[in-house]
Length: 96
Image (cartoon, rainbow, N blue to C red):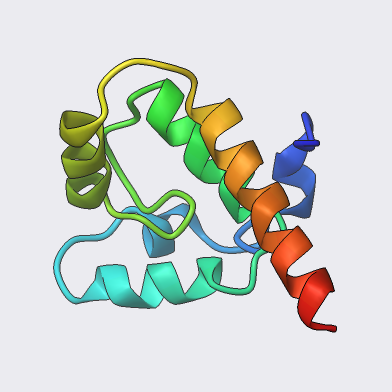
């Protein structure tokens, strides 16, 4: 289940906003913060469902999110990402 108050556990919660709302190659640095974040999927769902146009959210830039939204418009991103997260956890548990 998704954490409804996900912002408290975000890896970027202590980062400065100007580290996350950058352009060009600096976006890769911002995305690296997201890679180990425990609430990455919740963050990405928030950005996709609210069509947030600026910054790196859930490890994706605004350009990457726009491309994803063009390929799959509408629907609940929260449920799609929640299902994917659950499947990933099940796959990892099966390996262990």
